[in-house]
Image (cartoon, rainbow, N blue to C red):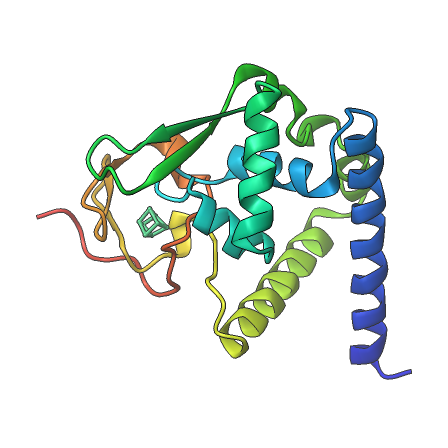
Length: 193
Ligand code: SF4
């Protein structure tokens, strides 16, 4: 089997494993996979991307399904829905404390334990390869990249401050770790002038 075919097959099997884990975790809380995927997304996205539309795009599911899921998660006290303070047409979603507790517990994830056994350089090469593959597929299919500020052309920085050149909002260190619906690959902008 060609290496590319083998890699696709391995990725498919890893995807199936991830889905099985998520299904198990969601059913133990009386939720569906989509509900849990939405909680996971909200735990990872930045404050510009916490809308039903962005979640629907990231998860590749219809707006109708997202809207039903939000209703259920709201009724269970896991998600809070609020109108954006500056633009009343935008709905913002945030996790409640209970919702955040259900979102993917990455630090106790069995995957981390296995990955941490790999030599650091192998892990770095695998991460780079998968990142390149993801970016290539997103570009080919004209999908949004949903990545972090560090690789975004809109990031503006000097030695101690960061801000988003697109939204013109300041960014804290914790913002830089979150995924963003407006992310676009490219060299970050020049220093704050
Ligand atoms: S710099 Fe890019 S990734 Fe970061 S908030 Fe702005 S648009 Fe999003």
